[in-house]
Image 1 (cartoon, one colour):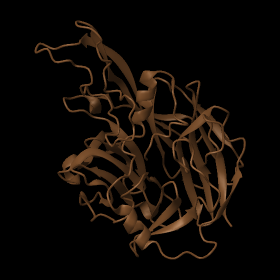
Image 2 (tube, helix red, strand yellow):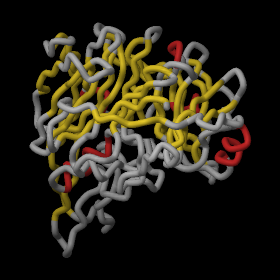
Image 3 (cartoon, helix red, strand yellow):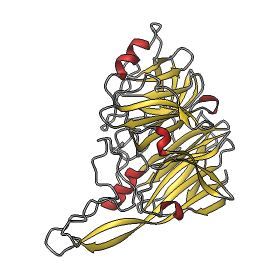
Image 4 (cartoon, helix red, strand yellow):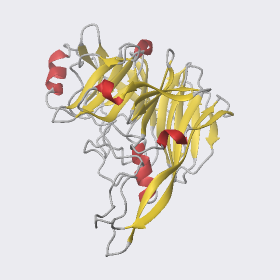
Length: 387
């Protein structure tokens, strides 16, 4: 995803801000020359192509709720709304905004970092972590300050997009002999809810966060073929209800210049893609992921510049959005096609520079999205229809 959607992701306190950052790790899309490729490959559009009209879908979220998750399964939009009071709700509805259903998700969202995904039957998966404070001397035996060292807690994006303190940053000591404070993962669970909100699985996965290496979960993805996948700093892991987590692709399978942060997302027909950050000035590059052979495709050649959000939907292999447009990726032609022209459609970015906070592409003429236009801390769910 990108810049941190600060206009809708503000949570009380330094710790809560750091936890919130974890759920969106690996989201920026930046490289040297991808946008030139994108513009050259985009075909000529018809005169009215890319123009959509916007209509609000009221009554889905409450004042003060922003969205942490947004997907489309079994004919319903599935969302997780996070209120300023720290409470979370799962809300689902039909694309026309009717038949709204919801259930509360237990836990304090201001002290609990969480990631979500949904399967084809509309079941919701939540991976959450809780943290505990650890105090220690501001200097070790060699006189080196501990403040800011990695301590096993989630890290910031590492791509320059999230400049807030990460959970892994200690509070600097202000005087000699003072204590610093760091945060460790104290609890980690995977919870599965059915469509009524009944908890049908609660699995302790704290063991994955143990060990000497820093470990964090960057995202969850569900596919028909592979089930529930964890995008982690150690690679891609698969979850089984009986055996727990196992590694499918190790960090080394992504190449020598891989730093452990990427956006893993599902495309059409159960395809799996990743936007991967490369060191040594290479920036972000998009690939198709082959889990069976544990390898990546050649770089796709698009969506390597600027900031992009990625979405799945009908019509194209996947979709990506920057501040100017929503594009569809056509793998057969190797092209990125402009689907929605934001300025021509009268759609402007929010204060964080984002036009589509979340979106599901129902068809080539219908999109359900969280758009700028509501109050600063409230989602604005809209239906976009091609003119």
